[in-house]
Image (cartoon, rainbow, N blue to C red; front, top):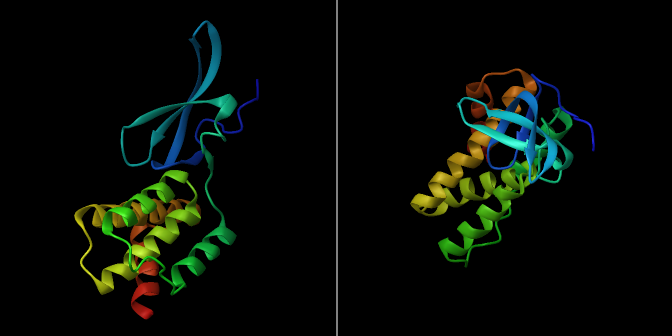
Length: 165
């Protein structure tokens, strides 16, 4: 069995949930086998998630990004291309949902960028507005944790990218 790569107190990122804290590692018996699990608390909530240690990375649990990845995210946010002009809102929504579900911060950044750019051209559906908020909060929270900044500082930096272009 693979040994834990995260320790109690570590911050990590889990797909769709965003930044989590490892609050303990515990053993449970499931289907007659003893397994180790990370017990994760979603930041800013009391929501807890159990993730098997042996396949945590396949489940998408990863380390918080560093400055190099943050620069790549800002580059993605600055890109001007939007390629879904002719798609119906529900097809766009499904595509955005799939990207957020991957857990890739880069996919989430593309969703944020595309929805933000789309918002300047047309009214977003209720679902798209919620997805914009979700993408923004996933990115803002992770960058804030990574840099030791407030979420407000990061949100302002991201807003500046969109208002400048």
